[in-house]
Image (cartoon, rainbow, N blue to C red; front, side):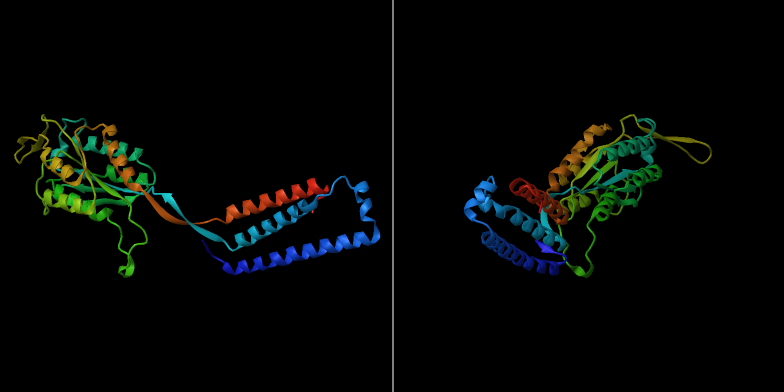
Amino acid sequence: MSFQWPAALVGLVALPLLGGGWLWWERRRKASRAAFANPDLLPNVVDRDPGRARLLPPAVLLLALGTMIVGVARPQATVTVPREEAIVVLAIDVSRSMKAADVEPTRLDAARALAKAFVAELPEAFRVGIVSFASSAVVALPPTQDRVLVNDALDTLAPGEGTAIGDAVALALRVGAPQAVPGGAEPEEEPPPRTIVVVSDGAPDGGSIEPADAAEQAHEQGVPVHAVLVGTSDGVVEETLPGGFTQVLRVPPSPETLEELSETTGGRLVRSLDVDELRVVWEELGSRLGTRQEVREITDWLAAGAASLVLLGTALSAFLFRRVP
């Protein structure tokens, strides 16, 4: 236990002085009473002698005073509390193939809706970041607890070209990484657990980092990558070519890369857009939250204890002596 104002503890020196003063006064009172009255006649005047119980009310009140003095010193205790904070980074595929309408209204819109439903069910203390990726990966939103910002960032996602899955995972790792402590000092506590959720139709195309290399990075950092496969084998994308011609491209989903990501990092591949299937993400995070040390001020508890002791001392005095001190 530590104190914000330890100088206040000097006041505890007054307690034995007050206790000694009360005993001296009590003895003097008894001596004065004996000088003016016959002690043998006392039982005829008083129903009962409280005896040593007479010491209880002043002892309780002195204890209450001591508790108040300790409270004034503003004590702090280090307690072990459950951890609640965690970081989830959503990596959303916005490549050309995500414009396919085999999942209504489009793959991207379905992925957006799934992400919003997933975020809505996350514990409020979890921070959520968003990375979008096409031919390159960009940070759409750093990790935050503000769910309005998360939904707004998801609404701004627009289709592009390419599918740089490896770049997206590597960037998501950097986005969710703990911030460096100035001066190179070690952080005071263990950083919160992290996880990455990749929502994609799975066919890698472009990027500077291979998905396998990004998966190894995540594995080394202990960050599981969960993946959601979007799309069906009927997926097609129509594009208008110069001259007014229309090109139809078949874009079936490709789960192989997403399977490799999840297996390498200890995550899970989800082949459904049902948000219930993603509960494994926060269940897995919950299993890694653990506990942390926290310094809490306990002045309020001491104030409540002192008030209770004052009431107890008053009640004892009223019961034993039929008077309130």
